[in-house]
Amino acid sequence: MRRVAALLMLGLGTVPVPPVHSQENDAIGAVTLVAAPRLVDPDYRGAVLLAVPVENNRHVGVIINRPTGRSLASLFPEHSPSKLVRDPVYFGGPMLRQAIFAVVHIDHTPGPGSIQIMKELFFATQGAVVDHIIEETPNEARYYVGYVAWRPGELSQEVDRGLWYVLDADPELVFRKDPGRLWEELLRRARSVTAWTPERRSVVAGIHLH
Image 1: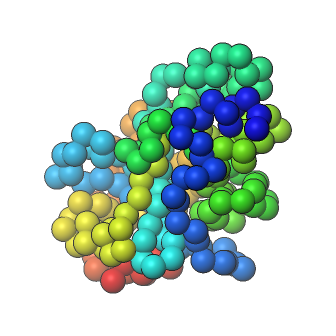
Image 2: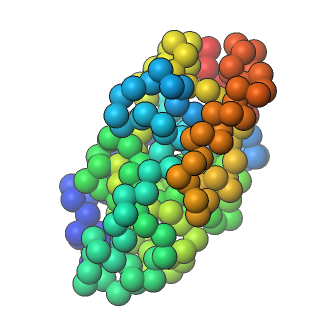
């Protein structure tokens, strides 16, 4: 086991992230979720998420606008490749926040346990895979502590309760350098289009919330 994989608490090789259905085209079903102002949970207040459906009507995702201010090198000071990562580590969500995950821009799966979010965008969940990304393509990924998971049908219920605006997934948002005002920007966009209608919620980006 390599150094970073060994340092990851609990061992990401056993992280219970559910597998995604096999996809042969671009219609993976990912969406951007924008927290509605009424969502006051501190983990999600003002949050923007990238989410994707997985099997059994479940969803997983990461918060993309919460930089922690910590570098990967500060978490793994003895691991030289971590010093090459320019972006800070982000808070990805409350699930397994003691572990490191990665969203990587690559044209093929980065390794076992990875979930395809969009074409050339994957969510890496296993420690050895995250370790390899850091060592081989450190700045083709963004790194997260924790992630978000919804039980079967839970995201649909949250959308119906008005907790999320649903927009098309945009891979460029993941690697945005100035996420500080991203929530306000997307909230205005969501309110200016028909993203909050039931029809829009059910068909956007191919995701089936009902």
